[in-house]
Image (cartoon, helix red, strand yellow):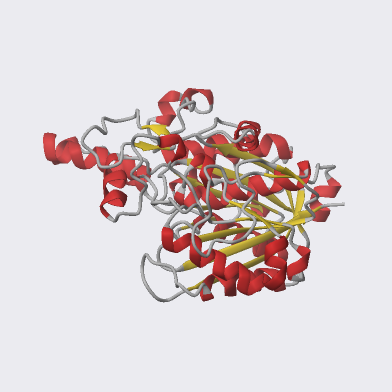
Amino acid sequence: MAGRRVVVTGAGAVTPFGNTVDRLWDGLIEGRSGIAPVTRFDAAGFDVRFGGECREFSVGDFIDKRAAKRLDRFTQYALAAGQEAMRESGLEITEANSRRVGVILGSGIGGMQELEDQHSRLENKGPGKVSAFTIPKLMVNSGCANLSIQLGAEGVSVAVATACASATNAMGEALNMIRRGDADAVITGGTEAALTPLALAAFAAMRALSVRNDDPARASRPFDRQRDGFVLAEGAGVLVFEELEHARKRGANVLVEVIGFGATCDAGHITQPADNGEGASAAMRTALADAHCQPGDIDYINAHGTGTTLGDLAETIAIKKVFGEAAHRLAVSSTKSSIGHTLGASGGIEIIACVRAIRQGTAPPTINLDEPGEGCDLDYVPNTPRDMPIRAAMSNSFGFGGHNACIVIRRFD
């Protein structure tokens, strides 16, 4: 879609590495793992007993504790990441511009913990003890609505739920809204807090999760021959997308330019990706065309790369279909190897990693990659970060339901 140019002027993150973008980036570049045994609840009887918890998060550092009681953790993460993004951006929302600033956030599941807590109260204490705040806490639009309220952003406020593609679909909507002239700025990205008893048990029942309980830090191993599933994690990644001239007029520091987006659906199986990678490759082609880029223009791809046997191979096939010979010259890494899979938040967190990769000239590594699996024959930046010029980067997000979403950013000169 042609139209006004869109840039990123701020970013904020809550991840298993900590509560800032700096903490996220440092953890990635140092090759650390944020995966450890679950501490928030007793997982002793579970088949999977580890994940990517945001252990350093203390809600009182970001939100009044009384108000926080009315917010599920996924909304708390969104507000914390949104605060950091707005501080970096320096964007002020006033009565004069509030209708021109929107919020579009992705979340695959929403308030899972609240649903579990209140169902327990219903079963154990009866219907009269169910909280009046249950629905406002668990609804998937609680994140975007409460962030709009906190910021006073009176433009569009939309929640996007396309499973693990949610944040990237949200950012695509934000990009196109600003291009069309429907907003001057949109706070966008994703948030998720589904590391809960029910979700952990349910994903394990699907046999989607790694079962390396004896070595959690090495459990997330995208593209590796010994990969056995993804690692459930939580967090938020929120960015300020802004029309270029609007940002220039207020003297904002531009981080990168957002230049392309593409989305498709496999329209096949509800949980398994198309093994030929056609849906994913179509989304990547659409994003490249929208960005007016040739395959050789992309230097780095932050892969969806969850660590599942089918998913990693399908993505590799899709990348080779789109990029041809250039695929083997690309740096392709999965930051999920370090922090696990944050579901609907993953695209927001991963595009922030792309922003830093471009600005720092460093591709973050895929840790725990000892021996590539059969058919996984690209350059996955194994175990060690790579200093390299990165002019443009793509981030891939693929979700249950066959949702494929890809976004392209480039250095702003």
